[in-house]
Image (tube, rainbow, N blue to C red; front, side):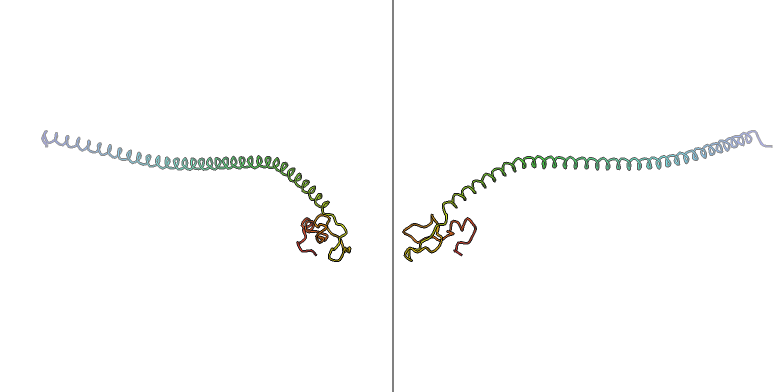
Length: 170
């Protein structure tokens, strides 16, 4: 038979072995729990990354859309301002054109009056060539020649200039 001391040592050994098994079981449970937590953490990270990516994409789309709308709004405002400036210039131009047309018409009427006065002064008359001893030879200008000079034949240079003819007599 074994001594009490040996039995006591065996009991202590068995208790220690039981404690070791219990500790190993507890360690196994803790390791499994740690593995589960790591898996949950990784899953949560993946989900967070997915949500983050989705959120970043949504924010980027919103920002892009907002920027595009702002750009469109700014461009529309620029175009409206440009159209307003063009319209204002056109209104000013219409007012200016009316004044310019009136001034041009007035100048044209004055020029026609002056031209008519010049034509009245330079009327054709029967011309006499003093070199041929007072023979009637054709029409002469009533203003351009003088009795002691040779006649200026009709049409005179003044009338030709008014008509736009060349300087040389045809």
